[in-house]
Length: 537
Image 1 (cartoon, rainbow, N blue to C red):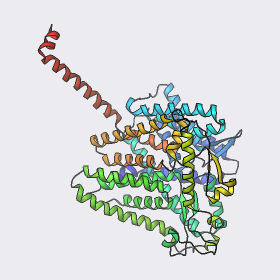
Image 2: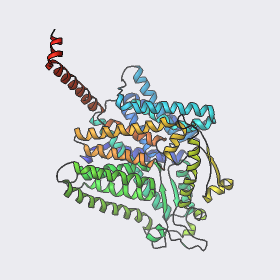
Image 3: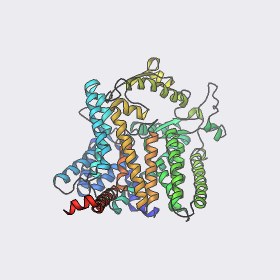
Image 4: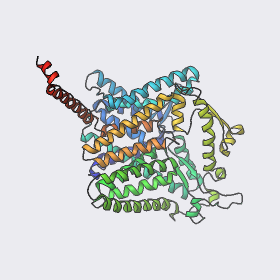
């Protein structure tokens, strides 16, 4: 079942498409041919979406799943930056509008499912209006435009998501996950085995396309000795490694949630398929190389919830879940070993740490200082939040704070920073959209959790729905320290999950319950001597 749902012909086609787009991006970046390529992508996406809107959405989800900030390919038109994400969004939405106007599809609204989205839309309009009036127009627009991704909900709720189409969604998700795992492991190997001259080109590409942040983690002190760092301890004090962080890696962490759910529920009585084991190892190693505390916190919470709920699914849960838990731990250790193997692989030999890329700035790289700066930002943010806690300060609102990070102090005099981009996710929402923004996301989460539970109780694929629900837990917890709910990545997953929840079944059950209650009231009335005689009369 797992292999059939997640691994199919489309999985490998999507993987090849992703590889091809990255190769094209490498070739055309800085060549002047970016605009023709974007026009070609736009026309292809428009044609494909017009013929099959669900296929167009698959392309859109793929780009968001692996594209980070959406700048894999971009060009400048009249001073405005146009990216691959923008052209795909425009093409899909234009195709949807055409199909809607020609009555080839209709929007299927559901009050229970769509109410939080409507509240969020009102909050976005409010934050945009206030931002344009009070703040710098260009900054307000730049701050707001990521929220346009929520309009993908319209084509999603216009499609009849049968089993085949939902399987295609899962295979696109799997193909994207496999690429993120491969790309992360590859970067870890390359940066710890090649010299700086070669790596400078690779680093320039991943930096300019904003795909990844590559940061040297094992550093040297003033005497040139390696510090007592975790990486140094694991590598015997002689090597070094890099933190390979991508915002898109949150989908790898979500995939791990789905895999864990499948192990705890679907595969608890059977031999674990090789593809499941391999993917678990790869996702664990990628999560570790990301060195994201937000990911770990979100993943730990999701896995604990899944583990607890798994006791209510299937037969002999205590024995089988315990056995599967040890299997999961074993695969996790292999994942750790794979991450380490990319660093210590003996060929070619690691360059001297003084020759490592970014070595000259490594002494200033201190994650604890960066965390301290984040906490320094919190108080000024809360001060500004209380200035307009109901309607918010609008998109583009800037906060000034003082950072202790040496890298920041080298760029800003005295470490005094003024910015409208913040690490505190929920404070960011509250600051710019007011309390309505927080209500919208809380309402969405509650609606989806109710939907997850209903679907689990009424359908046979409880493991899948539970795993995807665990992904929402990861997303919402990660947003505490790393903002995802104001980003296309977060919105994409929030929308991606919708077709897998049986909202139609929930509505039918609600209507049947209402009819049953009405019938019961009528029976009571008829049985009443007084009311019954009045009705007969």
